[in-house]
Amino acid sequence: MEFMDFSTLERPTSPNTYLLAPEGICQAASPDVLSPRFAESPKELFKLLTRLVRSDGRARDMLEDPDGPAIRFVAVTPLLRFKDDVDIRIYPDQPGGSLKKPGARLAIYSRSRVGYSDLGANAKRVSRLIEKLQAATLGT
Image 1: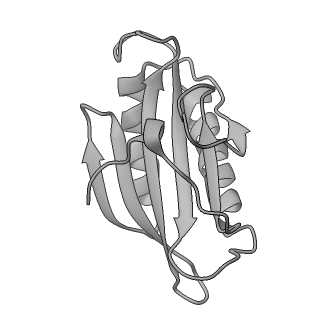
Image 2: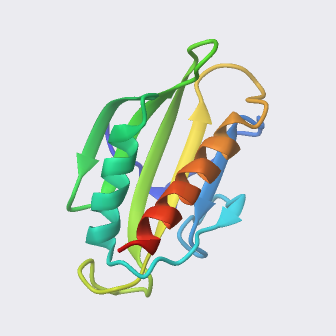
Image 3: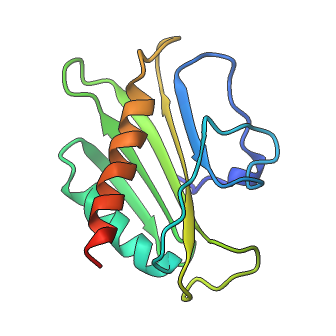
């Protein structure tokens, strides 16, 4: 598995994907929602996010690139065991910013491998992950 280049991401016409991204990151795709800002540095946010994904019992085959910083994993749906691919990349809040200085945003692209519609599963997955990440960052 390779890590996704969000700048060149092109989405299919089917409604079985969900994209959260900072404004201006994706040149060929429009996000469903813009990324919230986090006070943590991209490196700190990567560590928190890695722990959250690892603790999720539905995440499999996780790859991490701390230099990216990026994460890729396969999410398995609970009932029918469908496999969905999830890519995450963390960016400095400001263009040209440092990975070690405060302020980060992230891009998450979740998509189904099979089917035309995902019945909102990818949107729910991304929303839950953001909620957990925001709850975790409140205590840091």
